[in-house]
Image (tube, rainbow, N blue to C red; front, side, top):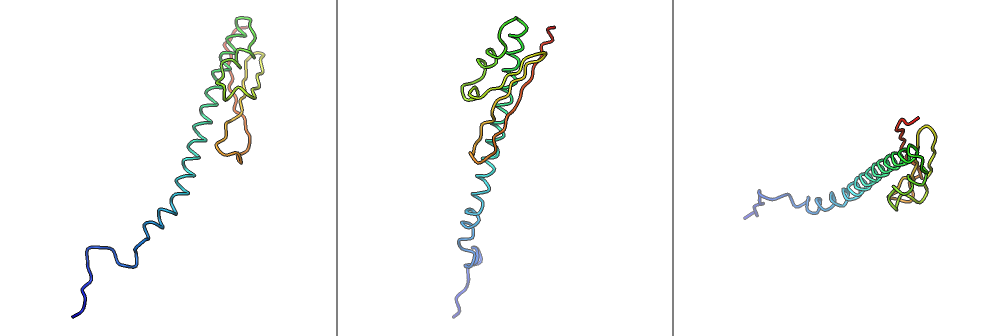
Length: 117
C-alpha cells in the first residue's frame, strides 16, 4: 500500500525557508533602525540649535553675551564644537551626532532674530 502524503502541512522541500527569509530580513531591519535613529538625532540637534539661537538672540537683545548664552543652553552632548555668529540675527551651528562613525561629519544650524534694533 502506498503512503499518503499529509495535505495539511507545507511540502517537505520548504522546510527551513522561513529561517532563511528571517536571516535575509535582519540586515534590512537593522539598516532601517539605524536610519531612523540618525534622523531622530538630526531632528534633536536641529531643535537644540534653534533653541540655542533663540537664547543667544534673547541675550543680544538684553545686552549680554549671545555666544555664551547659546552655548549654555545646549545639552552637554552638543556643546562640544559649537559655532555662534551674532549680528543682526544669532546663528548657532552644532555638529550632527552620528550613529555610525563612517557617516560624513556635518553641521546643522539654527537662526533666531528677536527683532530688537
